[in-house]
Image 1 (cartoon, each protein chain N blue to C red):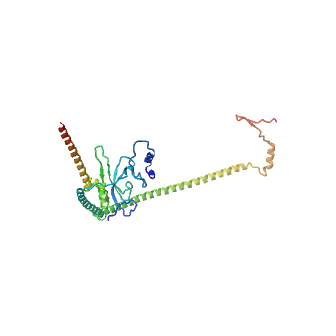
Image 2 (cartoon, rainbow over the protein chains, first blue to last red; image 1 turned 90 degrees about the vertical axis):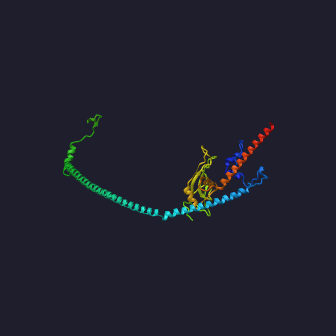
Image 3 (cartoon, chains in turn cyan, yellow; image 1 turned 135 degrees about the vertical axis):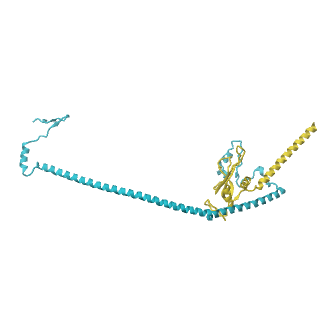
Length: 207
Length: 138
């Protein structure tokens, strides 16, 4: 009995602790093989229901008729299924369908070709545009580069001119003596203070 | 033999197709509902079937009708492919008119009628006996 607990655990729990007065419902397979027979069923001999011979004859007749009709129906249905299958494969409808499908296929292929052409044209246009764009950009870049080069040249020229200007004030071997004399003659004083308003105060050290 | 369409993967040795009633929604207690189903013989009653061919509701509705539905086209196909209906499925189809009436339906109806007649006659006899007793008393 305890092997059945796996399948009907709820009922088994109720069996083990019967709190309610309600009996368990008849659960199929409650008893296992080794369980003994119930007390109320000890001397029971199972007897099949009595057969009425008259009724049995009538019943046999009815059954034979029924089986005849059933067999005929079965053959009919089988034939219908076979006919349907045959028509599906090699019937008049099948040829028409095949033709229609072929036509559809051709139409679709033509449409596909047209689409391809259209897209090809679009693609070519796009390609052209892109090429023109690239060309334009290249030209622009060249111009830009040229401009930059020009700018560089002008900047260098400016620098050179500046240098030339500065070179007039350089100390060379000829100017050396003169410059030293000048420097000694004019001592420069860099000691000056500056206040918050920005005014320069030169007299800082008591001289 | 006609080639069966749409198998359910498993190959059965010596198995055949049956048209039977399978219990649907069997997690609900006390509310049975059957599906008329074409399935392999070896499969469990409620497990995978090949095709559903109808329904049967055994509990009567508010208008006291028991509703049954059939897909006759597919039933014809399966019977043509060699399916066997079970007894209850055959009885339902017989009552529907698709098959001839099952003999057991007729015999059960006859038995019930005989029983009711017997009960009526026995009650009539009892009434007669009571009446005659009262007359005798009076």
